[in-house]
Image (cartoon, rainbow, N blue to C red; front, side, top):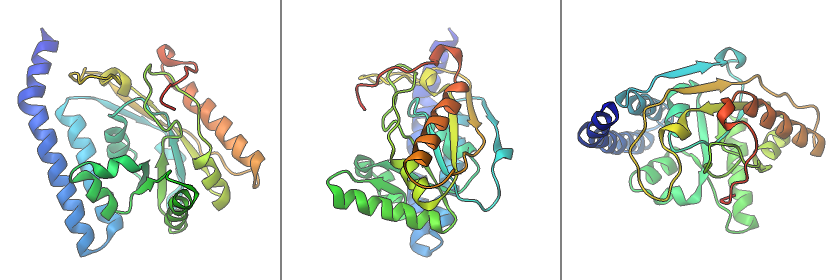
Length: 253
């Protein structure tokens, strides 16, 4: 009975509020960045939007590990990718100015894609070596100026709730700039909206965001890249609920 009421609530309350808040947030970001201070407009409206979406769905959030982060330090945050609600959780509750590294296809989303472009989010363009080089040059410039980046190194949402393999790009970026990597574990997003081929209602479930201790560079080169990637994978896996422990191949990777 409660699930039926929750579905009715989504149809008549949540979905209209989601559409309106997304368009309004995108417009605020787009107009704000034209006025100036893209760092402010590229972060705070998204933070408020992320919190608002989770609040309207009555989803409780638990955050652990913010004390592990140093003020003024740039980080490369790497997270497991459980589902669409990862975006709202990180945007709303990481409490750290950052830019997303996101798929080039997301630029096509009405309003949102334009707002992301204007606020200097980083679109990963894989249409050849020169495009990939431009992507990482932009990321380097952002990190050098004190802002962090958030990356999903799996490159795709899970179909099972389990983690797939990690790609090396984020760790190579951290290695080149000698920056610490911060693993993040997300729980609950897959339970709220599993990745399926057809649309489904949101399922109520608690969410948690675990911010692990930074992994400091141990030098430069392949050893450092492998070390940060392996330690990140282990740290993220360690905080997953038992149901989703262990590697499962993701056919979308």
